[in-house]
Amino acid sequence: MLAGAAFKAPAKYFSEARAENMALGPFYVAEILKQAGGVRGVALLVRHGETPWNRQGRVMGRNPVELDDQGRAQVAGLVDFVRTLKPDLIVTSPLVRARQSAEIIATGLGGGVPLREDPQIAEVRYGRWEGMDYEELIVDDEYQRYCAEPILSSTPGGETIGEVQARGVEAVMRTLGEADGQRVVFVSHGDIIRTVLCHFMALELRHFRRIRIDNAALSAIQIAGDFAEIKFLNVIPDIGRTFVAPFVVKSA
Image (cartoon, rainbow, N blue to C red; front, side):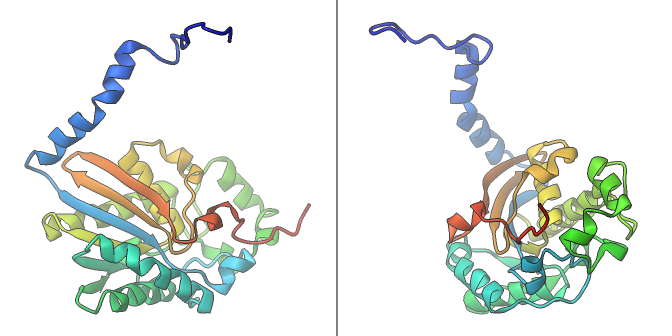
């Protein structure tokens, strides 16, 4: 740019009208959030802590894989974040790694927050893929078809990603509807959380893999009727972990 020349953004990317709409965004949100009617509340989405299978790149699915010491420490490190948000209820997947994570959070909060299970936020049914590691999975023909067409394909366990999203969203909306405006922690699994976030972000489900959800990560959504505001995504105390691969890839 020449010295003294005024900057002019390309019209296709920026305009005065668009700038005004962007600046007024908070006004719109404030108006929507104060309106009555519909399901209202805050969903705090937590992925379970790490297990040995996570580090091995092995598909857990419905297997009863427990947290290890590292996974427990990850969840314990999240407790102060959760305490600041003052949750009223904890709802967990019944799978042991999620239940253990929920219990760590509940204990860290002093034991006064009720905890219950909901099978609707359990992990995806992966069928025969469960127990397979990354190296085995990437050469599986059925897995390759699923990767290419995740919306149209189902896992060997019989679930499509759309069905996974539907049960996750139903669990969140049902719980918040019963909780009457409260803040609820949902302790669940990576793909459940990704697909639920897609729904509330109005993001096409085929893009669910663009959202990274780390072990023991926290995301928050405020819901008001048909509107939702994403407060934050994938917050973890050791933020550098978000740039580290969750497992080692052996193949070239």
